[in-house]
Image 1 (cartoon, chains in turn brown, purple, green, red):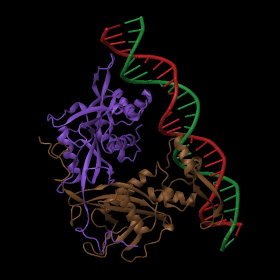
Image 2 (cartoon, chains in turn purple, yellow, blue, brown):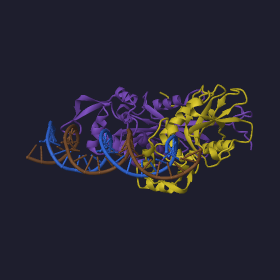
Image 3 (cartoon, rainbow over the protein chains, first blue to last red):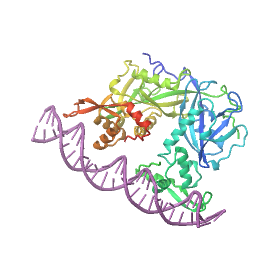
Image 4 (tube, rainbow over the protein chains, first blue to last red):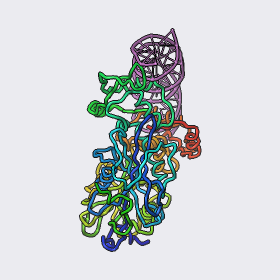
Amino acid sequence: MSNKNIYGPQSSYTDVDKILVAIDCIIFGFQDGNLKILLFKRKVAPFEKEWSLIGSFVKVSENIKEASNRILEEITGLKGVYLKELRSYGNVSRDPGARVISIAHYALIKIDQFQLSTSDEFESQWFNMSDMPILILDHKKMVDDALNKLRQKIKTQPIGFELLNEKFTLTELKALYDSIYGYTLDRGNFRKKILGMKILDKMEEKDKANSKKGAFLYKFNEQKYKALLEDGAKVDFF
Amino acid sequence: MSNKNIYGPQSSYTDVDKILVAIDCIIFGFQDGNLKILLFKRKVAPFEKEWSLIGSFVKVSENIKEASNRILEEITGLKGVYLKELRSYGNVSRDPGARVISIAHYALIKIDQFQLSTSDEFESQWFNMSDMPILILDHKKMVDDALNKLRQKIKTQPIGFELLNEKFTLTELKALYDSIYGYTLDRGNFRKKILGMKILDKMEEKDKANSKKGAFLYKFNEQKYKALLEDGAKVDFF
DNA sequence: CCAAAAGTGTTGCGATTACACCCATGT
DNA sequence: ACATGGGTGTAATCGCAACACTTTTGG
């Protein structure tokens, strides 16, 4: 058995293959009770007029984290967006144009604070998860994987707030969970549990957009949440 | 704002950077009640005689999954090993030798079925997690991340069995969880819960290695486990 | 006979579920 | 006054942690 390809005596940095590395972003948003995804229509061949995720190649001189943030900022104009690595997609044949390894990332965006790039270079559109168009390459698989990751992660980490405005009602928060999970939680139990965690600050104001009575607005309190974790409490959202 | 770097009209496959892509493997094992990791001593500069993970560069002609399996087979001689992507490590300065993006993978191995490669090209050794040596580059970070991933994943997926022989005692299984979590579970509650799931088949034989009375051997039954999932049961190990 | 590991039983508490019920208010 | 969404209360149930108890057998 030869170990020729493993790091070791024979290995060097000069006689090995270099490969194109890309970042593709699954951008999630939430509006009107629906989880949404931001997609882009390609204006040139190949795949002209087809829908896809947004992405870019990684430069030799930039970190992966820098590359992913660069893309998101160029598209949304927002800095400090919630952005995490999903996983890599590295099949030889995944992109007929060239051997490209894509490291997919997913982002959670507050749609209200977001406005599409004024540049008209790209045609972009928010889609409900339920009526997404066909996507190029393996982008559909990336979206499916990202949604599963989101479902899993939102159970144990307070990331739902990344999709809502700073101030939100409990009804909105529950609607967010409902739309991500794809089924309906119990109203009463939801508010008891979430309020019981004491990581939300109640505002004075009410939001009367959806009811005559009006619903109190809340803010996520990161300090209280971190204090919880320090205490070694097991934090489980729904 | 320029979108020059984003996929689009100006983008092409020819005028962008190519980068070295590597796989590094965190190889876990379990023996004598201890979670262990397989490390390798480099025999040449740079980092001569220092400990590191095993790895290799990805070839243009091979899928990432193929590359990771190739590495593991060359080292362990085993096929079909449990092997999953951890995440990518892509800082520009992580490897002083060159810009290398590493996609770390972690493997779970049944140590008893494993024997070190007869080749003496590499010096390798199993270490308890508690007395690992200093590792090169960002390999320590990779190991820490892999351990956290393992702790998290073993709570919801039946992957512990990958580290044990096909037949094992409940005491061994509990010791595995203990060593991964770093604290001790209650004996009685552990066996009640795991047996209650009905995904283990009890053998006729007993293992008398660790007690006069002898402990029954069990096998993981994948079919029963999958049936559980089909039923939509929420499966939680400890 | 007794130490030591394997295996079983019991009890109480806290979290979760599935509801039912009140509140405020714009039309 | 009533429909509608907001907000609260409660009883039954489940799961789990803690801990005590029994069984087996080699030395």
